[in-house]
Amino acid sequence: MILTTAHTKGGVSKTTTTWHIICELKKQKKDFIVIDLDHQRTIYNLNLYVREKNKLAVFTADNISQLNKILEKHQEQLIIIDTGGNGDQINKLAIQKADMILTPIGVDSITEVIGFKKFEAILKELHNPAIKILFSNINPRCKNFEDIKGVTSSYKNATTLSTTITSRANYKQSMGQGLGITELQPTKNSSYNTRLKKSQTEIKQLIKELGV
Image (cartoon, rainbow, N blue to C red; front, top):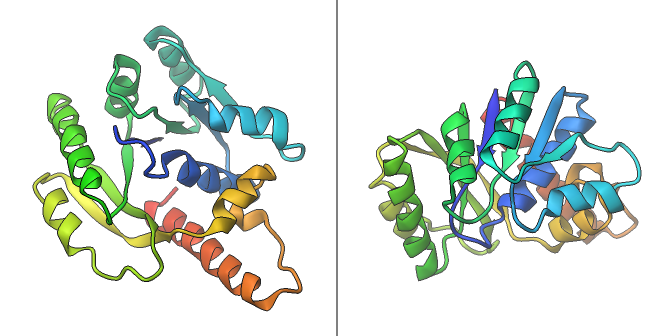
């Protein structure tokens, strides 16, 4: 199975979401590999330089030939791909090869609307694959997603997940430690622990909903 996190817009937390998913899967002892196609190579570098324990199996590919070789070699495993925020050929191939496409989207900016329309054009070019929309990096006070839902509903092969990922500092802080959010331990600070538990629950619910 290939799960590809994809969107042409930057800043929608593709890499952040992918990171926390794979760290939880590692914690669950799932058999998988990761392919980091983002030009910043955030996941690859975090795993290489920051994550001292429980290293992940992370690969990179610079061209279609390299990507195809990795996919063929690991075809019996769960493969998770973090794509870059552009529509070049290698990222299009990652979308085409996917059994499941996860598309994180924000809700509080007109740029989210424009960004999704650009991504929708690429999806149509690739014969309208099904995508799962994840409302991500959401302000905790935001409860109304109807405006962006009206935009995404134009793409008929989109399913909106019930899980949402809230914007909390602990997501980024844990990445800085080379850890996924579900790998963090509670502290003596009760308010921090409350926020941590909510973040951990979000990732676990997302993985369960995706069925990976």
